[in-house]
Length: 125
Image (tube, rainbow, N blue to C red; front, side):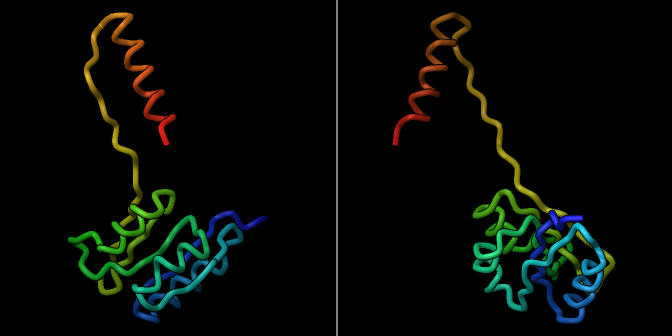
């Protein structure tokens, strides 16, 4: 089977990172694309390796890690799995698009105006 899930393991402490790496090593569809020991190296490593998932440490289970926001803003296609080393707790983070709305006039002119304004936004560079 071809490995199709690319994972960057950026978890501390080292023992937790090694446990995660060992767990993934036996999975035929998972490819470990990198291992990062320091949080400061995560963004650069994601840019270089293009993982589908990044596994990070979750130091405070009640708070979303700051690196999560940074990663998902820069790479909304990436999924983040945060593992709390001191507790039996894991959180899965992902980004999604916000859906916006605006009322328009319920007429042919209103609909055509909305189409044209959207087209103009997409074609201005």
